[in-house]
Each structure stands twice: as structure tokens, then as C-alpha cells.
Image 1 (cartoon, helix red, strand yellow):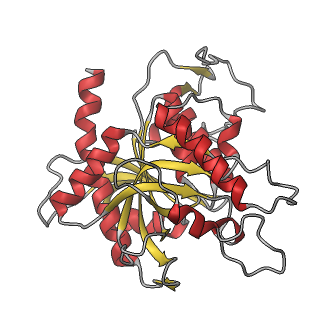
Image 2 (cartoon, one colour):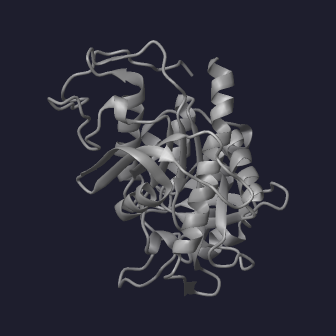
Length: 335
């Protein structure tokens, strides 16, 4: 595939920038973005992380429900300590891949484009972006609160289909075909959508997976590692049958829980709504993406953890520790 990299200059319609040099949705300037980034769905969670995990705040901006905070990570205690401060941005991605698509494009633009000339820079740092979200556990042996680290993500949304990123490896290509066949067989032959639902499969950057699992081990946090399914919604797309309209794919959660990706003992561990596009988009651009999501719903026992703050704090700590360890790899690659 031919590499696509439009240089600009980009128009006001394609890349809205206000009179103060701030990008349209996030409302921050390029100098207010760090290359080490946590993405969370809930704007309140971004504010919480900024208040409890970051010091020396440079910016705390809210616009259209999107909160962005940049400061310095401050992790101490346990068996791991960030020795040197890490400049970090925490930003809201919203719920689902449509909102995430906007946020990620603006983050990449802030990093890659010179806002004065509206043209792409000749060089820019590699972004390290880790999503810290919530998810539903699909496997019976996963206790509520367990952070799940994503290796591969199956996108049941269609946002990724608008970006021509190549398959990261042959596993992604194989899984796309096998999952598409599995879903088609599970649907009613008379369904008008039987041939319309086709997943795309993306891969977490292996170095980020290693950094997350290593950080969890250093901090003594028990985690699961496996595949993630990103759905286009919370209810029927994840197998929750509460509407008077029948789901086009009955019992989606059971289908995915039973799917064998043929990757050793790896299984599809969880469902959420953002990992697929994050990994597809960033990976296609050469930036590094990863995902760690505590399980707050147990889809096998039909239970839900409403008090999941402790699990989220552990996942944030692991993610920040991983970003700190990845910084050295970036410095080596760009030194």
C-alpha cells in the first residue's frame, strides 16, 4: 500500500484552529500536548486523574464535554517509583469510536502539524497513547476489578473502516475472516444485516503490552491479558437484550466468550467501545497505542461493580508507570 501523508497546507474547513491557536474540539494549543498520553472516556475521570496523579498542571481545559489536562506524573510508593518526572496529558475520548475518532485526529494534528503554516512538520515525536477505561469481563474466571490488558482488538464498530491502515500482522488478517464467519453463522438467515456486520482486527503495540504487563508486575497488580471486542454501543451491540427490538446478533457476549482465536491459551477477555479504533488508527500512523481496562461487569455472572474507583486507580498507576518505561525506548529510537 502506498504511504499516504498529505503535507498541507490544510484549510480552515478541514482543520479548524481558533484565533488563539487552539484546535477546535479539544481547545488546546500544540505546546499544551505531551507525547505521553492517557485517554479516558469519562470527563470526570480525566479531572480526577489530573487532580490526583499529576502535579505542576500546565493546562486544564474543558470544551464540549472533552476535558484535557497536562501536567507531571507523580507516582510514588509500592514497589515502583517514577524517578524522573514524566510530562503527561490526560484527555477525554468520550463514549464510542465516533467521538474517539475526533479526539485522536486532533491529538495527532497537535503533534504533527505546524499550526502557523497549517502544514505537516518534517519530524515529530512518536506518540505513546494508553486508553484506561472500563469493560465487561467475558470469561468466568476473571474477578470484578481485574485490569485487562489488550493484545488484539476486534472492532465491531465501523469507524476504522474509513482509514486504510494495513493489517499489522497475519494474525489480524486471519482473525477478521474467522470472526466474520462466526458472526454471520450466529445471525438469522433472514436478517437484512446478515452480510453487513464485518469486524476489523487491530493490534496493540507489542512494546506497550510488555510495558503494561511489566508495570503491573512491578506494582503487584494482578492483571489479565487477552483480546478485546470493541462494540458500537452498550446494549444490543454487547448482547444486552432489553429493547423491544430484537438484537440482530443474539447473545453477542456468549459468542465472543466462546470464540477461540487459536493463540495459545489467549481468549477474548472483555468488551468495551474504543480499543479497536485507537489501535487501528495509531498503529497505522506509526504511533504506539495500548489499552488497559478494569472489568466492572461480569457478563457470566451478570454482576456489576458500582464501586470501581480502586480498580481504576490501579489501572491508571500501571499505565503511567508503563508510559515512563516507554519514554526511554522513544529516546533511543529518536536519539
